Image (cartoon, rainbow over all chains, first blue to last red):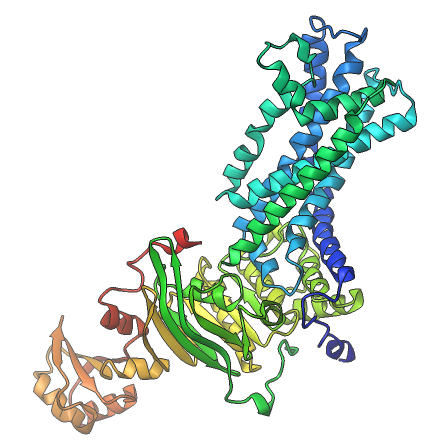
Length: 272
Length: 338
């Protein structure tokens, strides 16, 4: 029975106990999702099927008629675009997962515990980030099998990969805001996904923006998704990315800061 | 055997309300969900918050459990204001909401350990506590199974177990048996009985009058955001005017109502209405009259009865009397007011 008595009085009386406990709350909540991940392989598999399908479609269906200035091999142009699109698409799972936890009452359970409330959102975005890393590894393997190479060397390839992952993490916060703002899981699913089509297609992901109509081209060029794709593409192919790497990081930090603020504010407003 | 799940009530706290709601008001857009709800719960007792869907039960619970801020009024748990020190309140409560809030991708044990870790238990302590709760709530065999395959009843048990991890001072059960089949409902009642026997201070919302009757020490009846009656279940029922005895006479008995009333003597309530329907006499009797007493009285008077039964008013009758509508014919709003 001693162990039973020990369980008393462990609870914090006050918010805080400091950053150490906040990090632990985040880790516990992220751990909840990560633990469940291998048991829901279906989600992981579907998350992977879409990029593989896109790789094959663009390579074999469009590849023959798409030529991009400066690239002899469309694959080297296409793959970074697919990588970028996939990790950004995957960030929509964050909102869906949150909406699911809300509709099932689990978020209420968490909110009634003496924990840092931010754990609900941070834990989810972190665990989804880990899943995105795994997805990326599988995508890289598939693309290598199809002939894609890190033309700029291993380290630039790794840097490009990390850059895209950081960029996608920031999109996870947009998705989180959507997920906790809509009324149902279905709405989170469609609202979280639909805007990603224009964002990822009005970009340099699949074609050069120079082929687009005059009115569209500036939009595509200003699209942060274009900047991120260009930065990663340059690094993968050993070209000079110019300012794109720093611009991408700035976008990632800016979106994360802005949308995490909005999402946390929205989340805290539930108790009003 | 049942291990202890809760803080034992110390003498110091005895008779001090552990839960207090003072004039709670809440409005959702145009809908006034709460228009000044008051109640108190003393340590070691069970308060049944009874009312139809949309009455404001869940809104009250959400305010008391820090999930929602009231527009007006105040609420205290263990003397702590829920809006001023929500963290402290959260450290003292366990909430089992309307939906079984369990992570169905994890095992029962993992769910419990997770809550323990959130309460800052060490890994070892969280493990021990999870084990205690699993065996205490008859989930031993299912402990290492993924919750997805659990029945509705098992999910609810796990949900309650998760609310008990940190030995809460107050347990909130928001419609704990809604959606359960009758057998699981009985199981849930036994579980709640056992928790109550340990002195768990409990706030229980329900739309089942039978449930409040069976489990609660005190009941507040809520309708359209206001408390319309309060008291012990027995008192509420007594207000409706006592028990009634139904007697079916043998067809050839050649006796009638007057004979039965005479035979019952002091047992009958003088002013009580006498009703007959389908050959069955219906007479108001003193509260607490037993069937053997009635049978004995009829026997002594030589009246042959085929059947004798006593009915006591249910809370359903109370509800009908108070609101003019039954507890179940009012299925709106609460869903919209999530």
